[in-house]
Image (cartoon, rainbow, N blue to C red; front, side, top):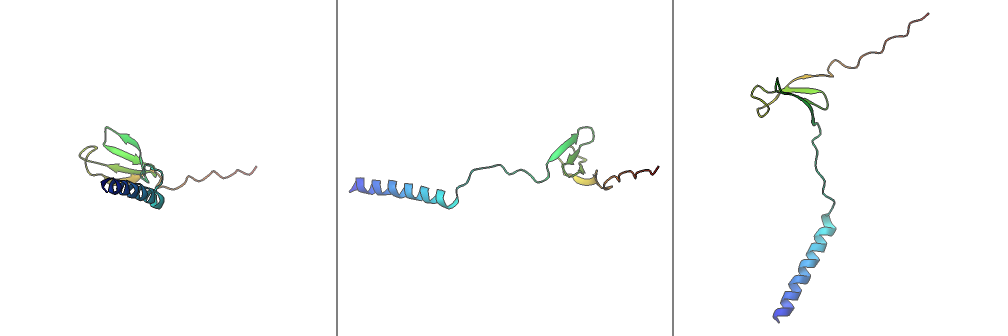
Length: 85
């Protein structure tokens, strides 16, 4: 009777493993931040993100950051007009 009980637990474990895989398995992938840091200035403790936001920290790179500017805030540069001749 003891071997039958062990066999049942092994079968139940394999069944639950297959069920868990069927219900929610997908390939693992890293979750990247939506706005990664693309540049840093070591002399001023400032960082620039991908969307152009510039953050500054008074206490160095480990401290709290505050938004100080956006390099794209001026908008698009207008194209020069064609000169009529």
